Length: 160
Image 1 (tube, one colour):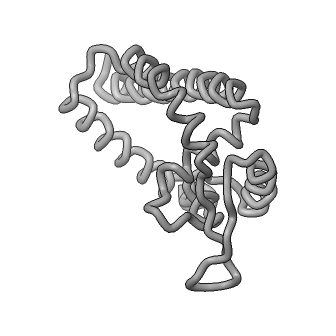
Image 2 (cartoon, one colour; image 1 turned 120 degrees about the horizontal axis):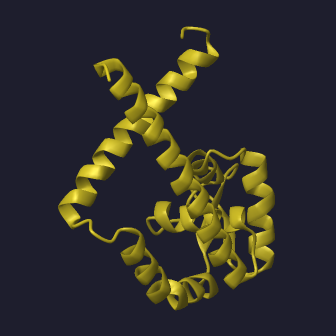
């Protein structure tokens, strides 16, 4: 096989592996969401808030950007999560036009209950990878994600 053919095959394999991982992660997210009685997108919103919040709450725009969801969808879903007492939404002290969203104690308690299962799941998924290997993989995946965004933009602009 010629070098270009080998490279093309490796790229196709990578893409299909990513598709498979994404599919499995969606199933995992659905399972976590079901345990809390919420939808998969609502679970992702909780996870994004947990990831982004540094103690002052997080804006809906930040959550939308992290998840690549439309801000109106985030607003709608955070209202539902607030009704379920998983979130609080408070006016930002810096700008009254924006809300700061935080997890409630109830949400934190529910996530804590799942932590042992989540650790076991992570150990199963990442079996065979040590911390150094995982750091290397994350660095490479970050580069691929960045380059994929650029390629997508170029494609949509007709530059590719």
